[in-house]
Image (cartoon, rainbow, N blue to C red):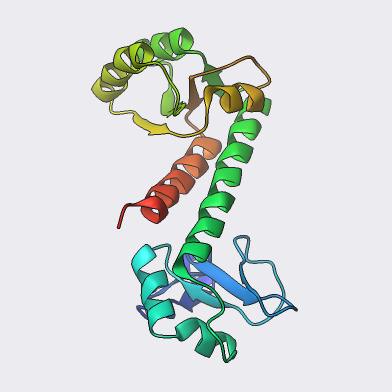
Length: 198
Ligand SMILES: [Zn+2]
């Protein structure tokens, strides 16, 4: 049996593509008949799935596939409500991953330290830039990251990044190569896909 076979596959209600369960979004109905996005695939009850794509969520709502799949007679939510809930979960996931990276000493923070680390090719693979970073720091850091083909993603205030890292304000943090960086890149990709302008 190959590795691929171990994880059960599920089908997106909108585009009918089958994928490993973990790659899809799962939805269940709460006891109060509210639609919940079951991000961790743990909530009890009948679950339905979509791809991690705005188009699939939108199409499923338009074609009333959520209500059919969950066997309710009203439209349980709007696209905006689902997307807001997913984005909030993704922000929390990214915060948690940054906190875990801090605990396992896989994060470097502060613009000087990150720029030096990038220049020295210290094994940094992902840069998180605060959304209120000064233009001076951004102009210094972005070309260095670009030259090394390191992905930069802008999210959170410098106050929040500092707080997660147990420090004062931090406009820049970077992760070393490893499982946490891989996980963070995945969640950031999902965040980008979900928050893309329509
Ligand atoms: Zn789909």
